Image 1 (cartoon, rainbow, N blue to C red):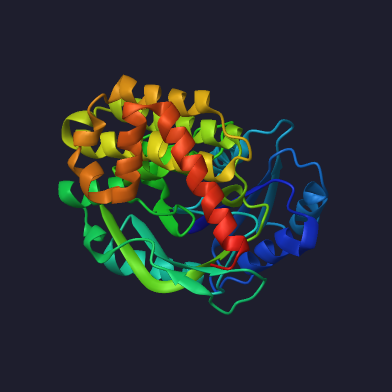
Image 2 (image 1 turned 90 degrees about the vertical axis):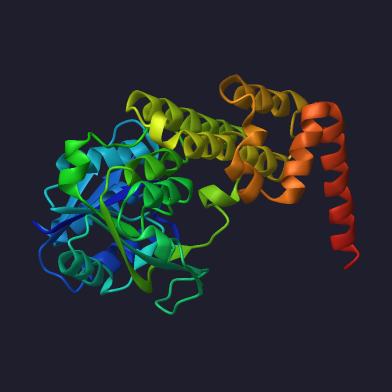
Length: 342
């Protein structure tokens, strides 16, 4: 078996989302592959849809079912345990891929000897094969044979996992998997996995279609999801420490943890949660200081974190209450200006 495509599924029956995803995978221009769709205890018709696909396409589609919800990471782990392919790919069940997506990725891997191959993706708001806004998810200086410097760059900006295929042997050799029971599992797995692959190549085409819609994980922010990002960051740090990565990649791991656990979570929480709490903002600061009390001196923090964000984070360091009040006031002013068309 050349390729296993793992599709975690949860409540995707509406609007034909699941069918559009599965149909795009069934139309691939390669022959030797399997689709492993894992239903994560859906409450809609998703299990029925998957059973029908398995019935119609025996040997091509394998449907697996969770009795309890384990989030996407748990579904991906279940798929990995059953996968027979030399290569592994992941697709979110509300997204889809171009017909020649995996043919081109596999061909690039075969031609170059790479063990990880990626592509660009396209942001779309409807079911279409016409590319929307194209996102170049990884850069040329991250590709090729991966030395320490390139691994550092991938660690800092590993890019999306769904636009890549991975050699299965590397995953198995190093016991790579996903955290279960949380959102943002890729925030932990993506950068950690990148350290174990030795040759990364890209196809400079938008072969993956990322569906933008209001119920997407990234568009609906809750405190629960913010806490899950914090958990993902903590798991990432703990796993890197356990695997002996801190000596070589200490600064990069510090920054990645700081960014995920604190900076991204802080501003998405304040911008996205309807009634943010000062106590949660204080908790975020305390959590990052517990591991990295001098994170603001990190060279990546100074160069990669925006100037305004650094100033706001410095203000929180002086007074959490003053920061909280100032940021909330800025939001009110911004909304008023938006209503007035200014």
